[in-house]
Image 1 (cartoon, rainbow, N blue to C red):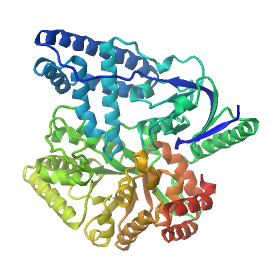
Image 2 (cartoon, rainbow, N blue to C red):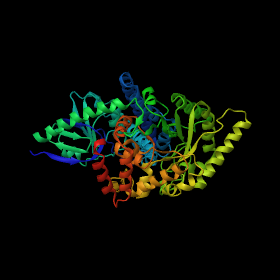
Image 3 (cartoon, one colour):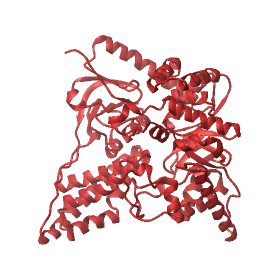
Length: 575
């Protein structure tokens, strides 16, 4: 049999060779069901027993995982919280007792309502929550059916994992010594499977259509997570290429690690600040030591998986913890970024036909001023414990910024009147993700202290392409000249005012993207912890004059494909 090559998304770099192992988790099949009144208590009993069985499974798994990796144990603890959520429990019981739905249909629809609100979210953190909800729902339905659990942690030998999708609980329990690589039929570079693989150092190629059918179980598979290729039954020349690439990659990983503890400095001596993107308040000390601060603290984690709004005191405590952990380094707090596509059970929001163009983020907070005021008061109070910077998301122009700053001033005056200690002043900036903000950057720079460019959303809005939609994946091109021109405009406008610009999207954590951004005179990059070492190494090899020439060249090109090919060729030595 001749070798066959299949392509997907290069989600986690690295190389692996081993037998394919098919993992097909339980897939629920639920149909609308109406029961008779006399059956309602019986169905409640079925549901209660399934809920308890699921709780025991999660508790057993959590205890086992906690012994080796407490961070992954938190995934299972979060699933326990979702499973035992009082609001969800009440909704399921009400649908059985009052609407006379069967237990399976009540579970499916109750969880489904929240899943549908979150799964289309632009923020990866919220999309991960949708995956967690689906995971818990499916576990509960499996227990309702009495089906046994399929354990990824029980594999005997090292394998290449082939599956439709990798669920959060699967990710938490898999044995990294037994999983050589991951291949999925769905997903992209920013989904939870990709994030897990990168953080674990497991090569991964995602979005390989019909992978389970095309890659027979037990057959040898070569995985190239750097280029996004999968080779079935590789021939000897492909094996030799694999061995050579694997040696080179291992050497590169070792080389990257040498740069982790040092500042990011280009080959011609220019300093670039490296910051972390944070989705929770939990930090590992080494992460803090290796960066210059936090370029993005998403505050949504405070609002999720709970039954009421976080109080001012709760928010103060969370922000203070992060600020103190960074010991005086800058921490950029982004105000709540949530909307009609990612609703909260305790906050009634209207359903919108197109939530990405609707009431979300700062707009939503303007509609619910008490929501924003509570957060602003907590930030002002937390500011005395470190170097806090405040950032407003989804700002469309100067009017949005002015309105938000007026509210901040009002909150500061209130705290002063109440005799409560608060920061006298701290930098206030905006997230540039709407094209209008980039176009008006010269005027916004008059009134904002800094800008942070969210390249993920900016690219989506500029090119009208949802990066999570496979049907338009070819249109989502971060290196498209239209996107780079807008980034250049923001950098130039704020630079003239002597004000910093940071990039906190996926582009910043990509060595190629980092090179282009430096060429556009951006000197602050914020990324996940796994990207810090590779980016620092790439910058150490980069000459800023060469980077500027390359950036100018791609901004003048006609297509995104042309620009990306040019950059990959010109900066091949960085990859």
